[in-house]
Length: 184
Image 1: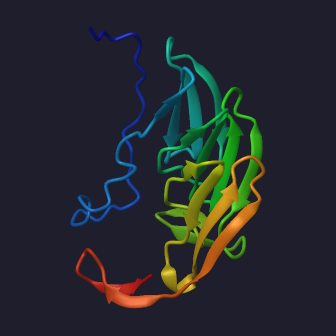
Image 2: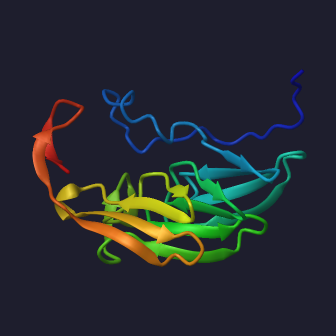
């Protein structure tokens, strides 16, 4: 039998894609996408560039970690760590227990910045949730394929590159929103 144990009120999410015609195609970051592991709930914030850890039993905040850009998608938990990507172009690895930074890895070609969604972000934002399997964390960085798309497999413990695909070309193709543009 389910019953409410605790609750938290946070401001409504402001999605990255504000085009009302395409909201149904890119609905991410319109709602919170928390994940839970080991009795802790990890909540990403796109408006304040952070991940917050809450105790699942009490709702009490255990820690918060700030990135240098919006955290738009759900983190992933693996063993005693939490991994998440950000519009600053980095993949972050934190200790789940205390939010301490273990390592971070820049996915783009350089630290170049751009204006994106009324913010200063990486020219290669990491706008896909990471995936972990068998000690390898996978993530990608890019939003403008004509500038290059970078897909990585990193050692989950050290952040060392296992492999990278940085040769994906840009193709001028019809997009899901029916407009032709570069993709790859």
